Length: 260
Image 1 (cartoon, one colour):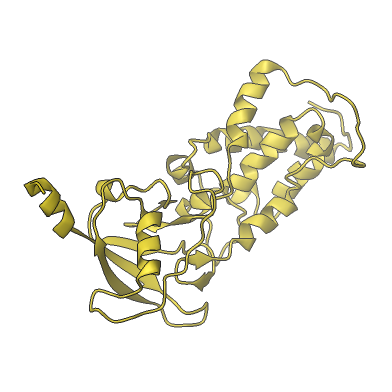
Image 2 (cartoon, rainbow, N blue to C red):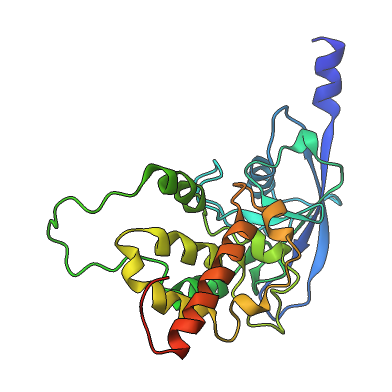
């Protein structure tokens, strides 16, 4: 065994993890140390703690609870706050993080247990803005209308959203005292309104974001676009929606549904 191998074998990774039995329990931090392995991400470290649930003091404890799914930054389930920054834990590499690595749940959403949160707030907002394309049956409707290539390219960027909630966590206007639906649902309005079939519900979606908790609650801090793990142009979508809602307001005022 080489000297480098010996050093790696003796090296440990230090964690400070937010623990909370349920949404009503008093939170606290628990420290853990696990053996170092090259190329570990936060998820693999949490799996190691779950496999051998002993804290830094050597006391047996409950395994840490967290959410995960695809493990390749597609599902958005493993969002948490890592060293003060909301991000995906599957792509957070231990070698690139300052230790002790501090893991906390996103504060925008109610805590279920430990690092698990209830993201119903975000999913309810997607329902509010009708972030889907309704169809009138499951039978074959034949080929649908084609989207111009230029529009398809930027619409594809918006479709990368994985409802991870990171943009809502980063946004100072999304909190327990605000009804603001947040950047992700707003961007989905632009995406589905741009679709040739989805545009038939365009006015309905615009009306939804013109009310309480909608577009007017955005403070333009631009934290969302910096935090988004997929690099989605959220602020561009919000600017475009400001234009669309202005036209929608005039159409509603004059009693016309004519597209502008």
